[in-house]
Length: 488
Image 1: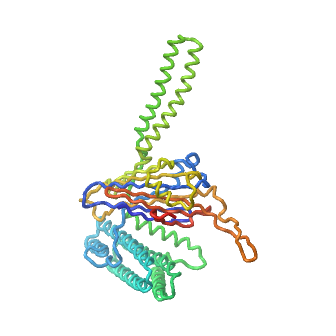
Image 2: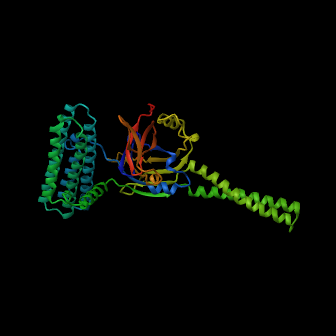
C-alpha cells in the first residue's frame, strides 16, 4: 500500500512524500492512484481565473527517486546480507581488482549505506518520541546511542583498509564525504529528538546527557578530520549549510531517477479541436446553402445570412471546443512522465493533472469526509469555498529478474502556498479580553484553514487521509492530522 509522509518543508512549502512499493511476488505491473483535494476558503480569493494550471505547476516541485530499503539500526551491521557487509565486500573487491566497474559498485554501496542509515535514524527517533513511559524511553535512548556508536565505529574502521592501500584520491574522497554526511545525519536527528525531550520531566536528564555527549563527539570528530561542516559562533555559517546541501545531493544521487515529461493526449486533443471546427463549418455551410436557395446569389439577405452564420460559426466552434476539452481532461492527464533507472531501463511512468472541482461533482466519500471536518454548521459551499483537485497515477513496471534491492518509487511533492497568501489579512488582529476591571486590548493570530483530503488506491485496497493546514500571511503555522471518522 502507498505510504505518505506530510510535513512542513519550510515557511511557505508543504511537502508530501509518497512511497509506491513494488510487488515482487506477483510479477505484475503495480498501479497506484492518488487524489489530493485542497479546500480553499473564499477569503483567499483563489479561483480558476486567477490561479491557472500554469500557476499550479509553477508552485509545485516534483522529485522522483528510488525508495530506500528499510533496516532497523540494530540490523545495519550484523548479518551476511546487511548493508555494512555489502559495503565491506565491495571495498574488498575494489582493493583486489581496482577498475572502473569495482569503483562504481563501491560508490553505489557507500551511498546506499548512508541512505539506509538516515532512514533508520529517522524511524528510531520517531519511535522514541512516541513512547509515553519515561523508563521505556530512557532505555530506548541508551540503545539508540549505543547502536549509533557501533555503526559509526564500524564504518570508520574501514578507512584503514582504503588509506593503507593508498587507493586513488577519488575512492578516498568518496569515503570521507560519506563519513562527514553520516556525522551530520547523527547530529540532525539527535537535535530533533533533544528538542522533543525539552518538554519532558527531569527523569530524562541522563538520557539527554547521552544525546548531548554524542553530538559533541561528532562535532569534535569532524573538527579533527578537517571536515568544513562545523558551525562556529559569531559567523553566518552559510558555508556549513552549503556544504551540508552538497553532501546530501551527492549521497542521494544514487537514488535519483531519469525522467522524460511530455504533455499527454496531444494528438487526441488536436483531433477533438478539429471535430469542433468541422461541426461549426457544417453549420456555416448549411446556412450558406439554405440562404442561397431561398434568396438567390448576390442579394442583400444572402449577404446578411452569410455574415450571421460566420459569427455563429466561431462561437459554436469555441463552445464545442470547451465542451470537448473538459471531456478530454477527465480521460487524459496533463502530463505523462516516463521513469528510467540509471541504466536507462524504463521502470514505470507517472501521470498528473490539475483542475478545479465543484462540490456537487465530488465523490461521495470525499464529500462525506469534508463534512466531518467542518467546525461550524455553516456549509463551506455556501461560503464560496473553492476546491483544487490534483491527481497522480503511478505505474511501476515490475521486473523481477533485475529488480535487486529496488523496493519501489518515491515521489516527493513540494507545494509552495505563496499565491494563497497574497490576499490574506495581517497575521495579527486586535481583540478584546474581559478582565476584572472591564476589558483590555490584545492581539490574536489571524489564520486560515486549508483542508486537505488524500485518497490512495492500488491493486488491492483504498485509503483516505485528512489533514488541516493552519496558515497565515507569513506561511504555514502547523499541519494537523484529522481522524475522518470523528466529527470536529
